[in-house]
Length: 490
Image (tube, rainbow, N blue to C red):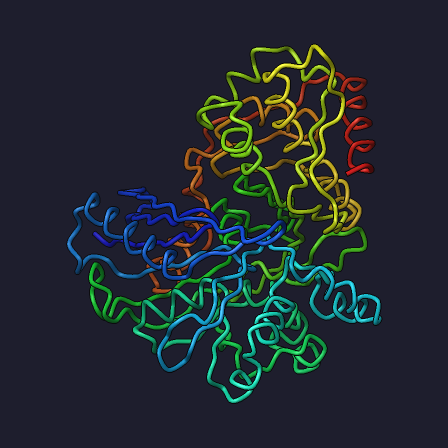
């Protein structure tokens, strides 16, 4: 038997997954780590806490799996993407906390770049709008606000999204690499030349000396050295940003295939094939993956808050004691009683791109209960995707046929049924909701030669349940009208 390990390093915790050569999950383990909010709009992570959470998850998963180390043939990594950190090349020590993708501290810098007329060039070259979401302005902020620019220009510092940081740690400091899917989230990667752009580096004031080498998503990234729970020499053969990994794990290999991951945020991606499709309706054009014989692109719509809104009900308001209670509470009322929740706690992402927007609750009355609020939160998570789907259809010129879903909140039947109703397309939920980690493991297997064709992986995908749209058209129209009005006020 051969086994693969995947590390899924997410926004609130890290997961380790062990699968066998038949794509069956043998073991998994999770480990959370603290979030840091120094001020409103600022979100940071301690890189050492991230690394510790990865090691803990790996130890627990391998202990549960009880497989001989000699039978583990490769390791894959998937990660929260735009989260940005810098470390000392010589010592490997981070020079600052990681600035998380949700962080809005560079909103003024982004506004200045847009006012200076850079947005059309950046959009054409990178497929991205100028927004604090992406890494480039975060790098510049660290260099300028922490007095690190001279060191960076001398080549003493290394930038990485979380994948590059983990590669550095896993290989004993020997590797500074990333893959095209993560590189394409920095605003410094040219989609057409498939490499870092000197002109983009100049416009964002980022020294090219800090950037990692880009290698294909399924390739030899390096080998493990000096990590206690892993064998030295274990090849690392797959790296993919988390949403692209979920697209891969959901077997969305054909042009037009789409998935939505309900995690901290909600991320809707559609495979657009071998040619990047520029968005004229507020979406992001991104690299999906680069594997042997194939380079794939995707259109992406990102809603910054999804599962995090349920956490807010629990931790911020005390409406529920556990996230699992949300569905039952919401189902205790027939509707949200006219309440609409726009979960723009970190601004509005695609297709609006309004970093200044904030969360909004409308339609409150004396009869509003915590059950109405819980239902409105779930409906708000789903209604965000209506805006994304409409924009996607306009960009591709073709309506979506169906949508696969994954992530923790995809276990919520009420959410998925409402999602099918307001989108008007079938929702397909797989047996394995850990599509992100599963995608990274499959990619590692492809990179090490365990599988030769994507068709083998496609055959492993299994549906657990399908949700068909059934809400009357006039009711859908009412939901969408109230949602549009609320978003306009957020």
